[in-house]
Length: 140
Image (tube, rainbow, N blue to C red; front, side):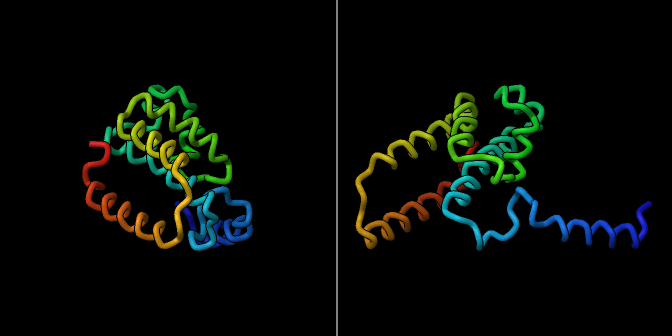
């Protein structure tokens, strides 16, 4: 059994080492790139939950090492670049149509012409509305 003194010592140590953390700490301080990485990581978690899969089973299915999947599913985004996450997500897409459709959407979005700020805001609102209404059907 852990004593209060040991718990206090652990908390103090964790506070000292907080600058070394590789996972999400303060979402308000995230860059656009980090937010994008979080969105990519989220697909792995949603897939595993929807399919009721353990990390080990997901690793076997995708041939991505368990340690890497653990880092992804724990949002240790500082350990990855966007292209590494996309590469791993493309492996998952081979096993899931929703992830494959998401990646196809990203490819199409990259090829779109630049929009005026007002048009971008309108499009963002429409996408959020559609996303919110379709969210319940994801990975079913």
